[in-house]
View 1 (cartoon, helix red, strand yellow):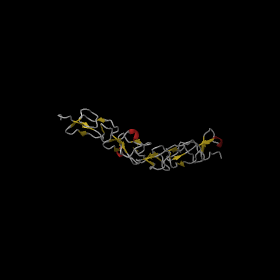
View 2 (tube, rainbow, N blue to C red):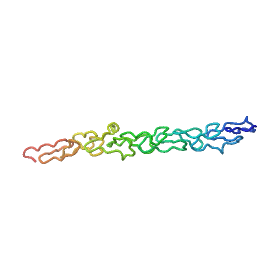
View 3 (spheres, rainbow, N blue to C red):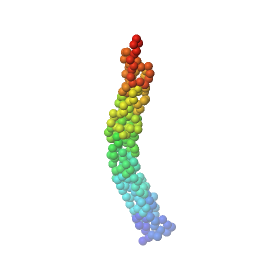
View 4 (tube, rainbow, N blue to C red):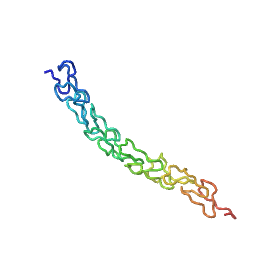
Length: 220
């Protein structure tokens, strides 16, 4: 009868089925005899490949903005339930991989934290640690204890929170990331990461020492 069938529209100078062309990508042609596609842009949460007579619903793990000709895979840090126009942030404390269908993802690894929607975990700062999975913010990282230090290169491999012993002659306060940040002052001894003032009858006239020296006879 010369009318273009659903999925096609008239694209020539004469109304003839010989001049019918496939419906453009991102649009759909539901009726016979159509002469334009502008009134039938593919709605959000669906996609319309070349020659569509109806919009196809977006599937789980994908999203479809208005005018989509194909499904777009959900990016890292996001999740896409079925028939969605745009993705949403993955829950804090979890990592969503490409094409995730739920907001749970996989637990954020130890020694790091994962804010909502992040594609990668953020390591706890130097001097801090986290022994459990699922950290959500930097506040979930705990400071290294007194007399110990937690170097940045071991924050993901040693997450017990015990840290490493401070070097003799130095002071390691809470959240120390190196064992030689603060030298033991003169008049003190630092053998275990803390400062001990030299007692009566002893002295130390140099910095960075772990022991106090007994005063010579006839001196005090």
